[in-house]
Image 1 (spheres, rainbow, N blue to C red):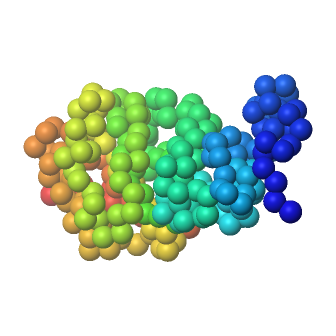
Image 2 (image 1 turned 180 degrees about the vertical axis):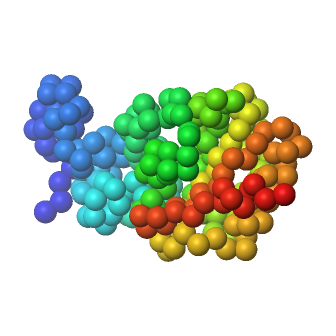
Image 3 (image 1 turned 180 degrees about the horizontal axis):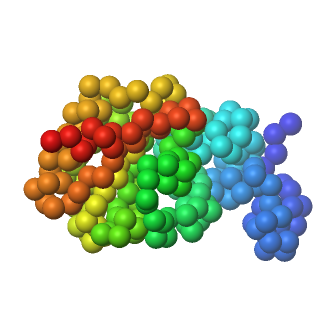
Length: 227
């Protein structure tokens, strides 16, 4: 039988429970219910939250879900889907915040080992940019494009705008192949060349381009050093 959150004992309502016992005492579905704020005519926010977790199978599945897939779940919609994904992204960034501060890049493995977690196992193709100073220290990073299977959505001008704002003199770009095969396509070579050429004009050096696959990667390091 369906029930509404208002029908629960006051101390068991997610917000009341959070105030009394602390946020950490809430279950995953209760945390989601707070983000949802309300349910549907037939289901409480808590029941909708349980439907979401059942549909996505895990928090990891929810984190990697596409906006339109999440929004299609009854009782969610686009606004609530954006709210949920934003909250998950904040938590993810907090967890990994210390990983980005002034990592020294000495070799390609340093890039792969420190930043693969942002791209591997993603069901969508993502394009990550690392911003470095003259000492090869990573001063910032940003996933700048999502869903770039044909590279047409990669806009070098935005990459270099961010590089200038961050005071970067060097950049490294990375993207994943959801298929798991890191071998570059013709489009991958094309966008690498475009970024390199614009970087030369702006005196911001493209150091490398990595393609992330399943427990492996391809590097354009040697290709970029060809005259």
